[in-house]
Image (cartoon, rainbow, N blue to C red; front, side, top):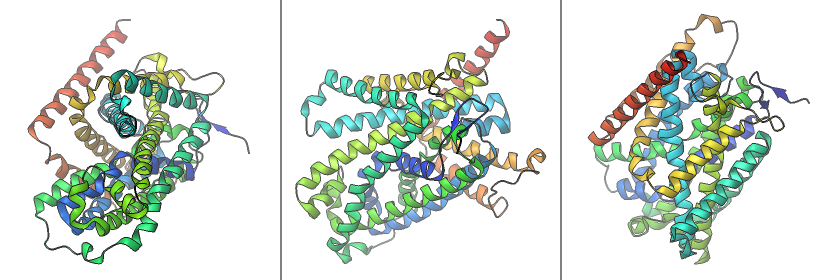
Length: 435
């Protein structure tokens, strides 16, 4: 079967399985190794309901992505959807919020988690020089693989997704026999504020799936691949999270507080002994590496798409003549991750990431509603979320609720960041006009 090429010159090589595994890889990242303890400490066994409640919110958002992603089949993911619905200005802001406010900072954080995990085995990685060399080596591997071709990069991401799930699935399967049933009963129902704060943590544990849609210009039959891939990937993530929380809470119980920094490692030690701790440290590092790899594969396509529209520097739109990949966008994006990884400055800016992603999600839901009413697309049948505006409303209400949980500093930082982006847009527009 011949490989189809998109209008952008990119090859359509990613199917339902590839998208689903990419979503699993992006979402099940570093947070899963500390999340069970955070939830258990806050709500105890009642935390299971937090997962269920949060999954309903994320399902509403993912369904909106599935609908709009089936219609807009060019590269760019969130940027492409918002730009199509509301124009260049809105798309420009969303692309900056997503690429910098979420993507680069989150990946830089995961790179440091890799170093921190391995430093427990090799303390020399606490040295900034060795740490920087590790970052350079790992980012170099990701860049080379992604430049060589999207198909190869997708196979790499698939492999990591499968391999990193084995230890986690091992904990779930072999951990059930170690569960103490009394640890799964809750003594009291948490307060609304506690539930709200915990849901905010869980919300971001489910976040990240949208980055996988950055390669939408390389999906095979996107009208089918996007909704099915999102549904399958989201279902796997939810099932894994629910089972993992049940096993961790059931084994550790009240002792979960004593293992708040590495609850899964503690569970693994109880199941197979000291070797389990070492295995989980490697798994944590490997999981983060997989998450950053998937990000380096997907997010540069947003830079590429924006450059194609004349909103980012033109060199980012160049496609490799042999490998048909946006190689300069990949190199640029990976370089920025490396810089923030070694500088550590992302820790001060990471507060922007949470608000940035919420605003990206809100914009995509609004874009879904706007494009649904676009008469031009009525002749073409694509996936449409059932129930009218009920699902988008659930998504909007959830996001607004979570935004109200942001503190004063987070709100001010977000406003300053968006204002800066707006000024940059008009400066670039003025420069193009006068050239």
